[in-house]
Length: 506
Ligand code: BES
Ligand code: ZN
Ligand code: ZN
Image (cartoon, rainbow, N blue to C red; front, side, top):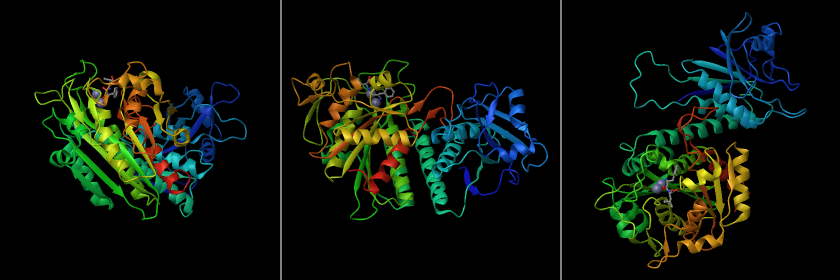
C-alpha cells in the first residue's frame, strides 16, 4: 500500500527520490510543452530553461507522456519527472481534475521501483488535491500475488508526497483521507477482480467480506446454499447449480445512524462465467473471472462509506455464484421460481447475471431503502453500444439516472444514460413462465435492464449500471488504469452515498 503525506514545502526544498511536475501542450500551437503551475521552483533550478530542455528531449505535453531528467543543483531530489497533462486549459480556467488524476497515475506508473516521489502538480482547489492523490495511489497499483518475480523485482511507488498542500487545513486533510480511503478500496476491488477464479469462489469472496466487516465494524450476514434453498432464492441457486463451488448471498451493512437515509447497493458476483450449458465459445471466456466486478465495486463502496464515516446507511448485497456446465446445471428450458415468487424460463444459461441480481434486488427491496443501485458486468450488448471505457446507466426514474450520470462525470468516470423502452418487454414473454431470461437480441443491454426492473419493489427508486465495458481493461495501461480489473463505478457509488448523506438525493 502506497503511503500519502501532505507537505506545504516548495518543490525546491523537498527531499525525495523524484520530483514530479506537470507540462501541457503549448496553447499557441508551439511544438514544445509549457510548464503547469507548481513547476516554478523547479524551473528556477534549471535557470528558467526546463521547458526548453524538455522540448529538446522530445516532450510535447501530451496526455500521459513522461520524461525523466537529472536535477541540476538547488533541488533536493536527484531526478525530475515531467508528466503530460494534454491541452492547456482555456484562459482563466484551471486543469480539469480528471486530467490531474490521469497525469498523476501516469507518473506513478513510470515510477515503479522508486521509493518516494513528491508531486508538484497544479493544485488550484481542494478537489484537485484529491484528484492528484487518487491518481497517484491508483497508478501505483500492481497485482503480483501470483508471480515469482525474483529478487530484483521492482516494487510499486512506495510513498507519495503532495506538495503545495496545507497539512493543517481541515478541507485538505479531509480530501487526502478521502482519496486514500477511496483509492485503497478501489485497489481492493481490483485485487478481487484479478484473483483467479479457482481461488476466488463464492465461498472465498464471502469469507473476505466477513473479515472486512469485522475490521471496519460492518454487519455481515452470509446465506449459504442451505439458507438460500430455505429462503427460496431460485435465481441464485439456479445459476450456481452446475458448480462444485456453491453460491452465496452476502449482506454487508454500514449503519451511520437510525434516522439517516438508506442506500442499497446490489452487485453481480459471478466468480466465473463459462456461460453454463449455453457455453461461451473460446475467445469469450478467458477474462470471465471479471464477472464479479459489480460485487467487488459494491463491497469496496460499502467499506469506503464506513471508513469515511458518511452520514448515510449503506447496505451492500453481493450475489455470488459460479456459472458452470455440468450434470446438475440449469438447462435452457428449465423454469426457476425466483425469491420474488415469479417464475423465469431460462432460455439461455449465459444470461445468468440478471437471475442472481433479480433475487438480490427483491431481497434488498424488502428493507424499503430510499434507493437501490445495482452494478453488473451484465451484457456484451452494452460493450457494443458504449465501448470499453463507458458504463451504461438505466433507471426507473429520469432524475435519478441524470443525477448518477452527473456524479460519474464529477468523479471522472465515463458513463451514459440509456433508456428502458417498454416495447422491448414483450420479447421476454414466455409461453411457460411469467417471463423469460432473454428477449430480442437488438438492444440486449436494455432488455436486461427491463428484466431487472420487474424485480424492484413497488415505489423504490432504482438504477442499474452495466459496467461490462470498463470493468476489465485488456489494452495497455493508461493514466491510473492498469491492465485487468479497474474498480469501475466505485468512485461514482461513494460520491452517490455522500450526496445521499447530504440530503441531495432520494
Ligand atoms: N458476463 C456476460 C456479459 C459480459 C460480456 C461481461 C463481455 C463482460 C464482457 C453475461 O453474463 C452474458 O454472457 N450476457 C449475454 C446475454 C445474452 C445471452 C442474452 C450476452 O451479453 O451475450
Ligand atoms: Zn453470462
Ligand atoms: Zn455474466
